Image 1: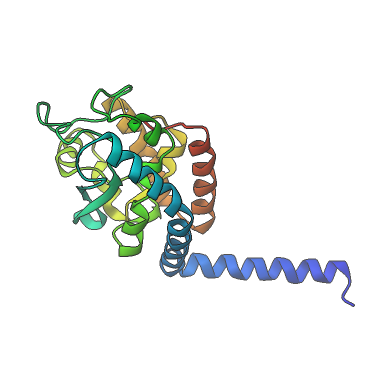
Image 2 (image 1 turned 90 degrees about the vertical axis):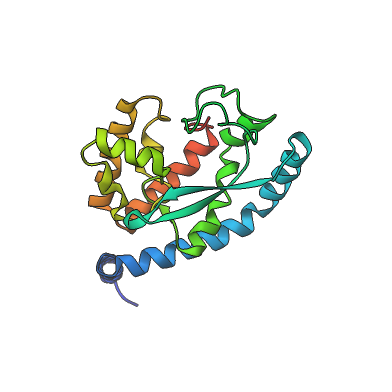
Amino acid sequence: MPEPQTLALISTGFVGFITQYARKHFREVKKAFDLTIAGIGIVMAAPAIFFTAIVIKIVSPGPVFFKQERVGWGGRPFYIYKLRTMRLDAEKSTGPVWAQEDDPRLIRFGRLIRKAHIDELPQLFNVLKGDMSIVGPRPERPVFVEKLSKEISDYHKRVNVKPGITGLAQVWHKYDETITDVRKKVKYDLLYIKEMCLMVDLRILLRTVIVSAQGKGAR
């Protein structure tokens, strides 16, 4: 029977090997991580998506899901999927605008759905398609990307990685209200891109669960 010191040394060496492998092959590891979490997540989220879809259909005319163009990895556009929480004509008179506190455009129960982050769950299918990652900078609409890229010098660097369902900026900063908020979030996004590794993704994912349970970061 090996002595405790020997077992500890073997265990440390094994953990070190796994850590080095994950760092060296991070892209492959991250892809496998994304697909695994997305697959498990879809199975676990299916009842919540189904029930919420029924509620949306009852309280608001129109489709249950909606897709919206976003800017993805390398600046390539893609369509993000969500459960609809706003009226069909939400931006008819205003054009593209950010969500706001107690948004009058929300349908009945829309605020509750957003607060619980249930509307974001269909993005797990975006992960399976390869458009998004579980963790990464949140993707923005083309109109806002064009505008913010002119006002924030490093904003364009956010597309150097796949966008994510959640990210460092989302779990450590409040919802965007001003250009100052966006500047702060960009700093978080760039820090994530610089330090990204499997352990960082796991920590952000755990933090996301905590934030979602507290109903923070959503409007």
